[in-house]
Image 1 (cartoon, one colour):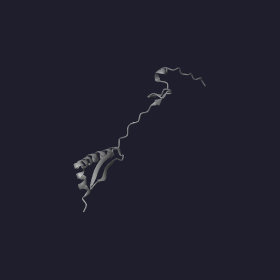
Image 2 (cartoon, rainbow, N blue to C red):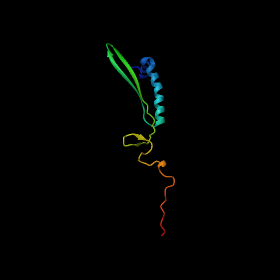
Image 3 (cartoon, one colour):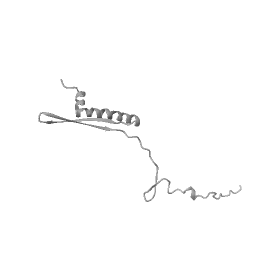
Image 4 (cartoon, one colour):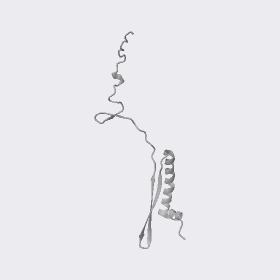
Length: 107
């Protein structure tokens, strides 16, 4: 009967693979719960033959979802620069404090 996979997993790299998986899984789960996006934890096992032996190498990779970043709004100038105020809009300082009001003619 073949050995249980969990027994082989705990033997890989003197138990370091199992430790890494145990550390990374909660990180991925926490990020998934925080962001609502999918993540992953991947265990890859490469096996190659060398004479009468099997060389087994494991690698662990994670995909931790990043939270959304905030967006900023900018206006563009004719030369391609970005600025916070619309360069085509008059600034308040350019508008007279008491602009003349046209008189209405009597009906």
